[in-house]
Length: 295
Length: 325
Image (cartoon, rainbow over all chains, first blue to last red; front, side, top):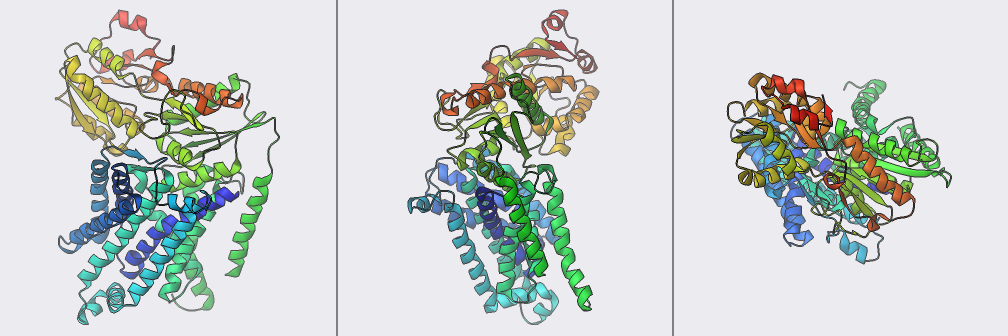
């Protein structure tokens, strides 16, 4: 693996670590399998790209993109809570609708952002080589996002959210409005996912309506893989595990991609992903079996 | 648990050592990335390899090819591009618009030749078509829409409404549809769009046009071509002739097209790659439009399928055809 391939894995892993943090909030904390992210990831990219080519500065564009992403989360929460649609279906519905909405926003399927000033540009001016600029900025953003989520989950509201996810009926009995927790949780998760989409588009040099394909699997690979390798009961450790899991997944993928490394070719990428996730899902079961504890 | 970490670290270092073994100077290295593995795009790749062989570069002898597909995943595409840059090949060939954008955004040093991109300027791959400068140039697959519509009018003289089946998420398809809609009023017919988002929706998109149009036109659309036989069946049942924008789909059941061949497009890409190998930077090579390259356009017809769709092709037309399927 060359330095470039390593940096590529690191930066892609960091971008998708944001989606993994969002997926941790929904899948693990709220126990709400949210598939909206397949739509809110390209939504973030679309809003950001459209604003950038309209002359808005990249930071404002990125911020607006993540706010619009939160609205997508609210739409899923509305479908689930008000229309009583099954959570997984509610997310799929929003994601499908977002496909058309993203085409509307961009006015075409693809917007090129090559040679435009992006959020990474100021870091290049600071003297950081352009290869490392995205990694440095993304690392800062991911660390901030991780700490904010840790702090949030430690507040009274955050504890209520965890209680609602762990046992909705018990939470309700204790006066927690679990519906409100879903609303807030989905808004945060999709906001951070759209932020990820906006940052990824600026790194890739384009926003494309098909960008959402496979995002949820990659995010879950990070969450499941990370928490399987670093099992813990502490929230800060678990969010750290999500970030590291996301990066490790990308490193494993880079390994599979570096030709002739272990006899794998590019077309094996999807099966490698599936095997990694399956191993990560199996590890806790195996550990539990070895230590004699019931799962 | 620590054994797993050690295994991962060992694997990473093993790969690092493997990658550092560089090829000899006489051997040219070419890295190819495609977004998807659709038949048309793979034909371009085959044509590229055939074309380079004609220029004297044989895969495995004096040419080392690294071909990778992102399988539709943008994160993977980004990683493949980074890996290519780290491998420092003599050239990177990018198939499709998004992979081209990822490569052009990521390196200003390694020469890039892009192919099957519809609008290189609008996608920001180059700032201008003539003498683009920088490290990237390539070939556009924009189709000769006007010639193709003339052909439709010639075969279906009483054309009032032309149905358009396409996937609106594809940049290539979308821009063709826009130019069809622009040309239609001048040529005296109306258009009716029937979008197909995803392979499964292709037959339904065709059925939606039954009874409303006299003919269907399909742009260069990997989604529709992916499920083309299902659309052909709908059209044959309803006796609506289908027209397309390239050769292979005519072989698969469309009535006719004036178009180019994707293998041929790969060969034209190989010509540009060869110039890079011989020392001409991509920035000094003009962006080429496949439809404007002399000899690349030809008439292709499918007589049997046309009859099933209720169309009789005139002997004069059959005589003009480069190939009758």
